[in-house]
Image 1 (cartoon, rainbow, N blue to C red):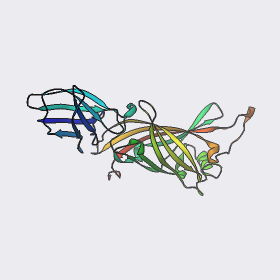
Image 2 (image 1 turned 30 degrees about the horizontal axis):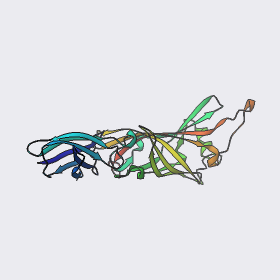
Image 3 (image 1 turned 120 degrees about the horizontal axis):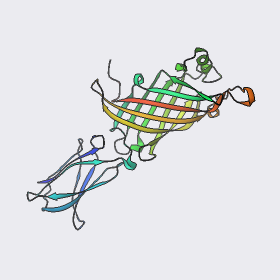
Image 4 (image 1 turned 90 degrees about the vertical axis):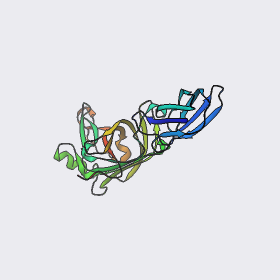
Length: 273
């Protein structure tokens, strides 16, 4: 006798901190139980046969309600209850995740001559993500990028970008980002708030983030994919070098578009090759 249920996210992950409440048709609470580490609820409270309402709540998720019928044996089998992230957006299951540089891209786009774009990427970087278990807004992101690894496909241009006119990699070899918080930004998007250190200057920078899903990989691990963008004003980081070409047009636009395509592996480190 009693109640059994399984609490899951839309991707099938357990919600270990969920709370299940049952009320009778008069609105009186007759049972309250918490899910275990596997998102399972098993409560042996004796229940009177009849119709009840089951309400499932969890911090960071939208509440879910369903009708349940207690049988003559006093048993209520609710089955699987799926919770959606508050606002509808999904993130991977809680815990540490390590970014896989071999399957990730850290890129930037600059406008050139007012008519086209130049794209570049950093080839050497490391990053980690920590999804908070109870309050997703407390999740964390940290990243370190080797500034000299900039690659635009043109050796002369890359050498100039490494110079004191731009990244000044000898004086500031690393670009770092450390998050300060996360907030929902719509039905399927998040905003990561954080501080970017570039050329020794630290400025707040928000990332527009979408989680593209999670799943098993061929090496026995679990991966999550993210897409994030941000717009930086070059002058905020003393990237003021420019040339004025004909008709007063600047060679380089005033903003940089940061584009991140990230794969992260569940755990505190990448699997050994």
